[in-house]
Amino acid sequence: MEIWTIYKMEMIKTLKRKNSLILLIPSILVVILAFGISTGGVTFTGGTMNNNGTFACLDFVSAMWAFFNTLGIWGILLILVAAFHFSGEISSGQIKMTLLRIGKRSPVIFAKFLTLVTTAVSAFALFTLSACGSYYLFIAESSIGNGKFASAMIDLPNMLMMIGFILLHLALFMAVTLLAGLFLSPFIAFILSLVSLFAVNYLINANAFDFTKYSALSVSNHLIGGQAEYFVSALLSSILIVAFIIALTAQLFKRVDIK
Image (cartoon, rainbow, N blue to C red; front, side, top):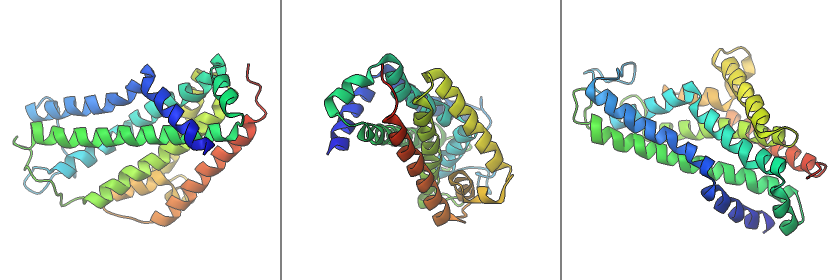
């Protein structure tokens, strides 16, 4: 009950925060990219195209997800929001008002993380819908679009699972940002978590260690190609790691002195 109460409070605060608007940037950029591709200003090639040189809606959406995720845009934005969402409140002392209302600290951590995940899901859904709408608005009738929704390269369930594993991978670093935010300023917590994200991404994409194949990012990369290896293992291991970090953060938060 306490978590639900705090969650509702945090969602209202998140909607009112201006820095939450940065999560709209990918949705705006994907519309601009679609327009650029349709006019020939941006070249869109690769394995997503069909044999006749055109691509369907799911081809475009999955390619945009792969492009934005590879650049690290989602990671940067979500970690930044997480840093200000928690560390910013500790640094400013704003979180003291929440603690005075609730009395317990652990539910605050769980509610804040749940709020961040909900915000990320909403931003992901908007981005996916924007990419889909942009395809039919700009690309479907162009020379490189075929106007179809279904793709021969990736089906809808695989694409949704791919997005879900990207979310799970980034949830890990949002949890790391909350942990770092207990002791560091928002900017330092952001930089530390961001460096950790890019370092882990590099190790996973380079297959530096055998166990990286069980990571959420590795599975999402394989799902783009229609493969679903290590699906269950990656899902369980990622959830357990995130749960451990959040539980650790909740315990350490009890000992943090709020000014």
